[in-house]
Image (tube, rainbow, N blue to C red):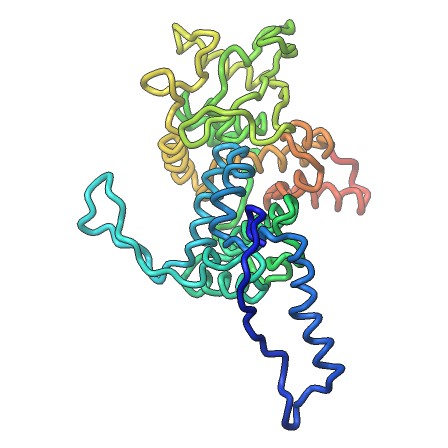
Length: 393
């Protein structure tokens, strides 16, 4: 039966169940069991899903992309665009060369291996997906990319099963993956490190670092921040029909891949209180912007319609940090700094979870990175209690 409901007659292909002669020959009972488990049962399953005769590439083009991927945010669409090219087309035998390619032109195609695109949905096996993942590792792709690739294939077949275009075991299930090793050590700044860094930065970078480390906003949220959602007064304000408490910032947008959009998840829509120190920093920064419009960006770029280049700002932050002997940091390390220093300061994990916009506390605890100085201070307080030298301050 074809996907449009019509029928077509054809010859079935023979399959090998096992040896019929020799020392390893199968008995009739064994042959029947192997034939049913490996072949006949799948035929029965696919009789209920005749659309499974379409190829993986056809399914992705006709159903998966327009019905599933198109509903995602830009970050999700970009991610699937990359992963689907690998899953459908295969792993390139070598990286494409851009030598001699003019600007705006595409690099010449290179041969690809182990792609699933030409296989029918019903014919894809666990071994096919495992071979795809293994090829990616052999060609130098990271273990994290391999994990994303397996997840992409699994999601394709989950959706195919959901709309009844496929039945049976998901071929991406139980696919083995290599161990993921961190490319760099994650870290959080200590109180003294953060204090010295803020004191050495120019106003723009100082305000950005202060917002990131004292409100838990990531760089996409900091970049998209608008003055109308920063309440620096002692009374609540109503903005776009929503109440923003006094001395608080409302996180509602993010700037990702040169586009404004909603926050990453619903839990990231949150109101974060501002400390007195951060209030002073923001007030000083606002005074430097003589014509700061209510709908204007807190950190505007040259044309005022786009945010300040966060990459360029980070390079200046890293330069200042290096002069102070602080290890190389990234914007996300400042989010870890908020969680870690909040924990050291005695903030409840549930409060940190809400302020960071996490769905559960386990993710918040994953962000905690106790620095050596903080650990030593905590141990000194603990040892003082043990030996009766007084209570900690």
